[in-house]
Image (tube, rainbow, N blue to C red; front, side, top):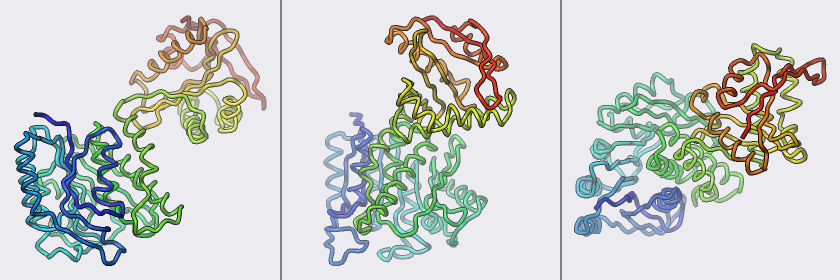
Length: 448
């Protein structure tokens, strides 16, 4: 019986955002069924609260495992966090053996230490037990203290060199894992993030963000849960790490901005909508969506600056590029086109990355394609063809029998792309645009 379920093995704090109260909503938010195995129940988490109650559930874990085995349950993935004893580590290792499928992925967050020190509840021999668990995993997500302890290396405080972090990740290869995500890494004062490596594909990289001063409970659980949800949604490791960092950082900033009591954990729930969108876009591949909100229009203006300087540097002067950007593709110009001139802008994403955009407006002649640009790194992937398919459908829906555009007569690459899509040169025009500049274009038309 192949059940599409993920099992999260963590403790549960009745109040305070951490462990299962974080893992369950985040993983479930992207459409994955998240089952749970609580290792303990606490009235609150242990950070900042006094007098909390604690009930160890170790003696319940084996009977639960046995019941699930009797039902024929198997899990698509496991995600483990804080485990309070060697006995719990042994039981979880047994769970992996009893309840895995051939294609099960095991994620282990070896929660036991930070800032160079083991948590006070653990003895010096505990890292060896946690390493044993990590050796059964496919993906591990330790911080540098935890990795150092499991490797028997001396922990050193950051900021770090890239060479040092790379060497530590390389040493983790001995665990036999497929992927390592190392959290809490800083290469320079004021920035912090995650470094990752996929030993199977060779993919590696980092996602860094400005550091927010302070200690925020539950951020490791937010990151780990978001990473599991993204990976199990089909995202490659690079995009999964970025999605996890984005949710974690936005949760911290939201908490700081609201002035909320940080001992209750970070305010991650309002960020789930964007996390869902980011994961969904990445999992589904290319998306093309109309935009009108300020953030998206500003993103288009920023893309315009990048792509115009890529595309036109050899055709027109830098002065003319800057002038045309300000006149036609600044945030203010784009906003006016949308609000008062009948323009629609489409934003093109490849996964969760901005890849390009286009802008169009219907008129008496047909559907005027004012702008269409794809960033250089995303070209030759068929994105332009997908945009033109959307534009053809749009023109037909608006009752227009053609799409037309203008293109610089010296832009042979773009002309070739348009001809491939079915455009033909109808005429050539020279248009003064002010400030002594002139556009020297072909008008190209495609019937729909």
